[in-house]
Image (cartoon, rainbow, N blue to C red; front, side):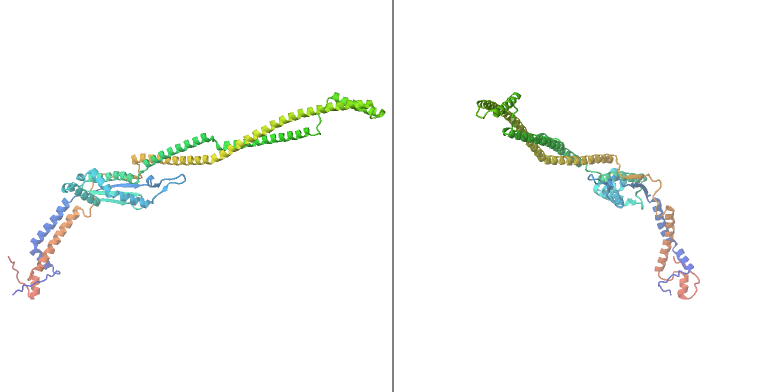
Length: 460
């Protein structure tokens, strides 16, 4: 009696293996056909993926330079090159930039299946964004300032269009991020400082007209020189007054005598000689002596009166000169007081004038700074309109002629399907034999019963 129990297959016996193969040939064939057919069908019907690439060069342009904010500051690099590359890659892979590309080209062109299968536009955009992000690859070429942008798609022209649109949109986004937004602010500041400068200049001009201060240093120098000249004139006038006062005192003293006429002097001399001659012959009480003395005294009285009259004339003349000298000295003193007052007033106004000048100078410097910055900003705006950025396209994306290289080619996939289908069928046949109770092969029967098998009968 044959026991219905599981009998293992001897995998070292080729005969057993061949027996199993021929016994389960239809099962093996069915499994082979299914596996091989599926793999072959996938190999022929699998979509081809095309990858378009573009290479960008990131330079250290004006966007990354520190703008000078003052007259003594100098421009310089504001960020490190490594940070610049990370920033550019972040912009290229930003969702906002990808959504711009999707909106420009349209979801229906890039992912028509998503556009047809989505119920709402929001769902379509979200699905397109997720697929777009999976198909986009942005990498930095090590040791260089180059960035490679690659996009995979089933349509070669669409893949190239996506990459080129992404690069163009990236330039606009780059300008939005790094571009100058200060032109309007600088215009307002420049205009404000221009108005303030005009007000300051008008204020300075009105101050000069009101206080008659036009050239402070020159006016001060002229006043000081005029004061020195007046001081010299005053000293001269004072010396003249002193001399006239001394002369007046001398004229009024007894030491001063007027010059008598020659005739009077001769008469005095003759009478004195006559008196001396009479005294030698006569006494003092002599009538002749007395008569001569009377004549002499009369002549002296006349000479004295003439002297006093001359003294009066001289005193009057000196007093007139003295009054004129004193008047000139007084006038000079008045002029000096006026000049000193003007000088003091000029000094007082000078401080305010200097303050107004400093204010006008500072405003002019600020106006020049903002004017220069506004001019630079306008130049940068013009460069932005021309899209002159620090990113250059080294290699523009072209329509790929061949699909993206996959891990297995079509031939390799068909070969793998052939071998895999054959191996799967044989493996399934062996598993089924192992699960079948009894002795499936003559060898297993001989091994189990210990007697040789004389004949085999196929069970139908």
